[in-house]
Image (tube, rainbow, N blue to C red):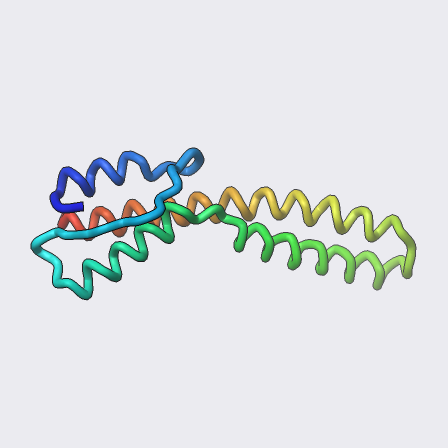
Length: 118
């Protein structure tokens, strides 16, 4: 990326779903110092390749644990609370993944806007 047009083009690719996977990002904008160019390139690559799995996994663990603890404390041990906890956990994982994708998309667009001075 060498110009504001390159940054704008990258911002158009920054979508919630269907973001392209990026192997390498090189930032050569003349208004950024070399250290900031390297840091920006790493951040852009990381944000383009973010799949939201970290947030989804965290949501799964938290939701499954919370439901399981609540169910077991009320009803004691049986397989039904385990099944309920897993169903709730999978739902939370899907929502968490989508929220993670949305968050990384917003961060990527904000970074590209900051870099372009807009």
